[in-house]
Length: 334
Length: 265
Ligand SMILES: Cc1cc2nc3c(=O)[nH]c(=O)nc-3n(C[C@H](O)[C@H](O)[C@H](O)COP(=O)(O)OP(=O)(O)OC[C@H]3O[C@@H](n4cnc5c(N)ncnc54)[C@H](O)[C@@H]3O)c2cc1C
Ligand SMILES: Nc1ncnc2c1ncn2[C@@H]1O[C@H](COP(=O)(O)O)[C@@H](O)[C@H]1O
Image (cartoon, rainbow over all chains, first blue to last red; front, side, top):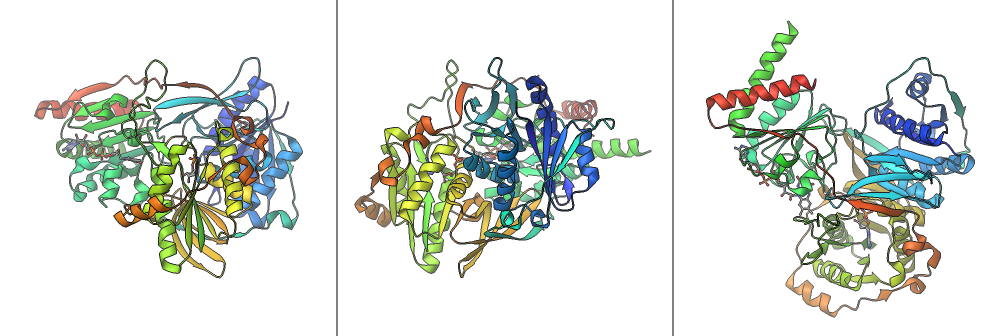
């Protein structure tokens, strides 16, 4: 039986925590299949401490390709390296995060190795009897869930929605095997060139990494009122989201948009303020662990998926909430 | 510039109804539209043509009905269209769909750019654009939010990634998938609609594009849908109504309690 592989992902020189979430998923699958769990790391100057961290978090093996040409993500060289590794080791399952990188790289690779790929999965399991990977994902704007399998080709590939599971916890006593692989220059040839990264200065925390997201909708009434959303997010150490109505009105730029035609997020807490909960919005946030909704319309769709719903005027609720959080923080700080 | 834009016709899902018994979408009376993100791809292609001349060709794989989508794209300002329609294409997953579209694009030939929507609202995978790039061995920019410049066989683009933007330079021909930040789609004009009526849209099957039948339709698709079901919403869902000072105080206290209990503060 081939191994279960997860792609470790770097973002700006650091391993991102989705890498550990994938190990958590992978561990469960590898145990059921009675096979080894491996992480694949592609990058430049891959520090030993990162490799050790992957092992502590559950990897039995770590494949490392460390090359100057892999410093920044570019789909062609990354894909060529992964395809070569897949051909050599024939993994049974290969998981990556459904980040912009995973969603670009995995389909490029899957085409070339002629295997199936399931996008943005939220549940993964092994089918009794056949040992096939059962990949469940939301489709049609989250209206349905579909379970998909790849019965005849290997590896079975999937991208996994970030935050849809907890990161595996480290166990410093674990040991694992580290395999360094080298490739010839021609593998890294690319028709694209990485130019630069431009940080979004308007967000302290990126939406996809945020534990808490505070989102505002048209119910805020005026762009100035968005300051309350910004303040609440800052107090909670969270990121700011928005509905499409808000983005279309220019109250917040597009990178903040959550939903079908915006970002898909899954934070520990999603606070929806003045958002009706149209299915296109819900499609982007319904897998959040907790949802708090504030809306003056008791029939708003958003309440159907909220753990806690407050029916009332946000103009009254937000200022008081901000005040109470400040008081609480002051008290805690003493 | 010769630009190919693959578009998909999808059900209008803004007020989708699900059959609670079968867990499938109620399709009766549901209107078909161009996949919303593909409108941005079409718009960007037309703008490039308007700036530097050339031709925009839309292609769509789907039932005959998808002709409507192609005609609409032409009414917006695209020049030509091709429909990929054949029983043998039915049941294609993203692998087989990319395969068919890549073969069609190769047959069209001599193109500089392929511009796709980032994802379609029904399948919602975002895999077809990268799949086309892979089949054609072309450089790729996904989540593209801006075309910065095109000259001397190169294109510079900006893409939306976690925490900011990234800029890339790709050799042409290249494949882009676009997000809605890239443009603002125009509406079809009356003149465009008249023109669209007159444009002959060829319909291609597997032989026309020289694709191996082993690689298309259900037979060519490595994935299988095992089960479709409606998600169960399992939230305890407590509701509090604010109608006076006292209930306002209570509601906010409740939020505080919630944040503290869940260790979110
Ligand atoms: C193809 C397609 C793709 C789409 N993609 C997205 C997407 O990615 N993301 C997205 O968000 N939308 C998307 N939409 C749009 C979506 O259908 C909704 O139009 C949008 O989400 C509504 O935004 P909203 O909730 O802010 O506004 P509204 O629906 O207008 O809701 C405002 C809410 O605020 C409440 N409110 C008003 N005043 C107050 C007050 N004082 N206090 C408390 N509550 C108040 C109202 O009761 C109401 O429920 C898409 C639509 C289509 C057709
Ligand atoms: N059947 C199809 N015909 C033409 N283009 C398609 C088709 N399916 C997908 N596409 C293109 O690929 C993009 C991504 O679709 P998807 O991978 O299905 O989410 C769409 O926005 C279209 O540009």
